Length: 317
Image (tube, rainbow, N blue to C red):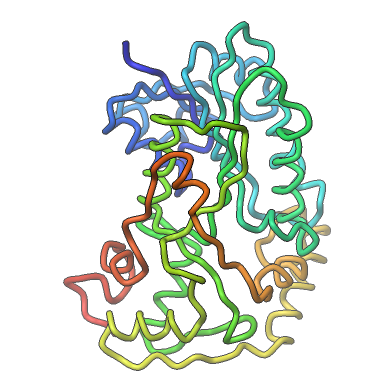
């Protein structure tokens, strides 16, 4: 019998890739969407749609009923207050937990968090991700769960890392913090493969796992510039962005968001997160639990990613 996998955040960058790979692997997929009109190509791909949101108890119960597993990808990445992030990243997890706990035989849950949760003091976002994990640690009673903490994820469909790689392809790498800061990266297809490995094998205990692309101790900005330069066949200059050039717009963003009611990406709290010097991690525990191993490091990942100047077939400009 074909297993049904329920997913939130299926229309996002990461969620779309996971959904695609689940379908390719032969699973039946049921996705929570705010509206059918915003579901994009999901219906054409054979995805069953459930209209609603993380605030809607009935929608969450319909989404998860009779599913073998739930993959929770939805989350807030923009905001100027703790409450804006917590509404989705904490209370959304709690409502999903309640929907699962209400079932006679709850499915197991894989929740996608963020490596930022390792340092909750840095930003509203990182704190909300940590608090969302703690909801599962402290409140889940009747179902098995695991959490994945990916680092920065890139690949086809990415809108956050791609502008940086595009700037570097033109010879300039703007760096918001220390040039020696270390960070791990992950190609989106490898993240989707990790989700599939979890669905197929699971883990022995409820746990929180980091994952990366397999490069020991991650990258620093010199490493990334060298790799982009090799791919694009040009020198990439690292330019440290002056603190005030980011501090001032971040502060203005926060003030304006409170006046006009929008959710900004760049805030003073986000800058603390961006300027942190250690975002490196590894995947050893996840590999031991599921057998998953990353396949794609940065150079190959960039060659697989359309939409930037050095994608094969396009010349750097």
